[in-house]
Amino acid sequence: DVKVTQSSRYLVKRTGEKVFLECVQDMDHENMFWYRQDPGLGLRLIYFSYDVKMKEKGDIPEGYSVSREKKERFSLILESASTNQTSMYLCASSLRSYNEQFFGPGTRLTVL
Amino acid sequence: EDQVTQSPEALRLQEGESSSLNCSYTVSGLRGLFWYRQDPGKGPEFLFTLYSAGEEKEKERLKATLTKKESFLHITAPKPEDSATYLCAVPMDTGRRALTFGSGTRLQVQP
Image (cartoon, rainbow over all chains, first blue to last red; front, side, top):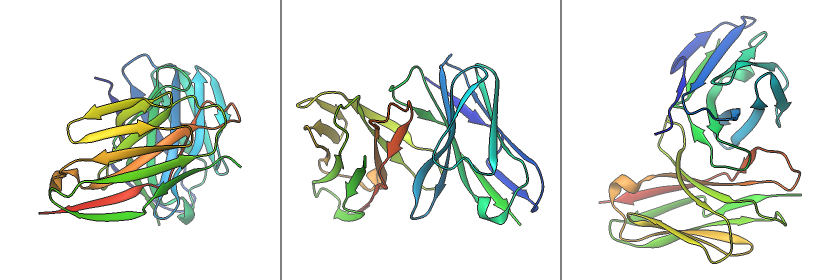
């Protein structure tokens, strides 16, 4: 079974802090993704990566950056957290482009 | 504009009452349509992939079907444990490798 793990289930941070969310997949998948999910807005793509050190912006990249130094690990960075970044963050991976994505359990981030 | 639309937004069924959820899309060259189940506070769980019109996939009480412009998720004799939000997703025409998700159907099955 594919397993996607995320570093924290719940996280509380203060405005202006730098926040790191980490995601690890154990199935040698090429592609990894970061989404945020908010009530009434659905799943929105922040960034994705189709190879090590490669990244592409999604629909809402502002205020975020990403890092993929190893194939199995994809990090989402909030450079200076703001209250409007309070959300559920979901990581996913897929073997290749246009394949089904497998999701992690999510990180519920609260920015105070 | 490429779109994925799910209906209804919410559906309440009695245990054993079969029904269908709809996912319509506007991409011209479909590269797959994906169904997911999401429980509250958890990540989406992959259910099915459909690639061509006429294709069907089944898992327990769920059956997914695909036409040229829409997909249906049929739920036969549902149980309370089938209560969840069901999401569909497709890759968009833009060639972007990521999926675009519909807003989901929130299903509640009452005993």
